[in-house]
Amino acid sequence: MGTIFLTSFHPLISRNILMSGLPAMLSKDRRVVVFVPAKKADYFRENFSGPNVIVEGVPTELSAYDLLIRKIVLASTNTRALYIKKRTELYRDHRIFSFLASVLPGMLFGRLKFFVRAIQAIDYRAAKGSPFAAFFDRYRPELAFSTDLQNELDVSLLREAKRRGVKAIGMTRSWDNLTSKGMLRIIPDRLVVQNEIIRSEAVSYDFVDPEKISVVGIPHYDRYVAAKERLGVRDATSGGGRAAFFSSLGFDASKRLILFAPFGDRYIRGNRTDILILETLSGFDLNILVRLPPTDTVNFEGFRSRRANVEFYKSGNRAWRGGEKLNELSEADEEHLVRSLAFADLVVTGQSTIAIDAAVFDKPVIAVAFDHEPRVYWDSVRRYYDYEYYDRFRKVGSVRFARSAADLFQLAGTYLENPALDRAERQRAAESQAY
Image (cartoon, rainbow, N blue to C red; front, side, top):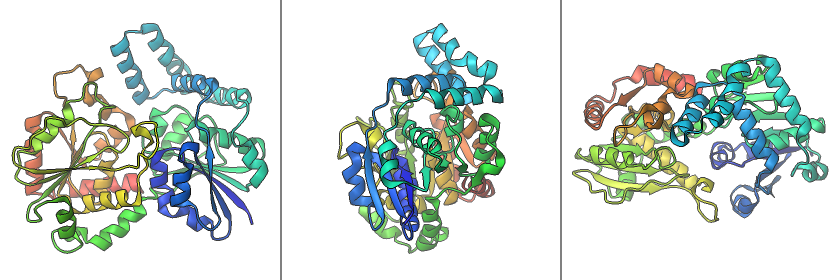
């Protein structure tokens, strides 16, 4: 029986890939070995192991070399998203020489193929050792599948596979990775991406041979497509479990629902923007479900609703130490998100991928583009919408941007009165992002 290696080192991979049913499909006639963080191994064994599916824990501590090469890769990549990130750091720490060192290599050489290939070649030869070497000896895989090929551990797996002559597939984790995480350190035999936009980025920024790229869509959206049939989202006000879902949250099923996905504290310094958004939306007489970010914190202390019935939902399993970023989503969390999207009348968010989720469910989206206080561009939420991935999404016209709290209230009222507004644009967004 042949063996396939599969990685899951980021909380969204277990949701995006493992819950999609891929391991079960592959394990029908092969052995699948899933590599996960060592501290989470028991959790993964309980939730994802099965016939021919083996879970192996791997230490996740990064070496000094990994930390150094990460800085080099980021400094050698020329994208608008990375420039904005580095310019934000300059605004906050005023370290001009550090800023220049982080942007000049990419500006001068980042779009030159020989430079990118030189960095990759030096990295391949300089990196020593691998936590996967013993597993290659033990299982002798026929294929290695990196589900997040910019993760340092995934890079190590791909490198070890290449050194041993084992075929490898690599996948981008999300829509922003190729423009915000730096160049690819190693090119797999086959690159798997979610849409044509990412495919073109791989060719432009990393000089990947187009013939080596497969566009496959977003795996966990298979669940969304099935849910649209199961829950009847075209007529979500009747049947499909809406009443039961509202009842479970203490909501009035006769009133409409706004789904609010906050920015999170990691994205806003001294975050009071999320509470201002919620205070603004609570001026409507309806239900508001606040879906707290699973890998971040948001402080809503002191919030008092003006009219709306507001409930909070926190997803994620926090059974281990290490902070919010290590939270793992469960099947129940994902089903809750599916129902939240299916039965929502409006989605309000920041620069989140939930804007794509909403487009798949044909739900109007408002993206918040204001701060709780006047801020310069480099310290504002406005800058996030100029990253390549969101700028391209914005140009489709499926999302409306609120420039102030008053603007948010007005836009929300408009969409609640006319939910079909921008439907054609949402369809185009779903097709371009979800393929």
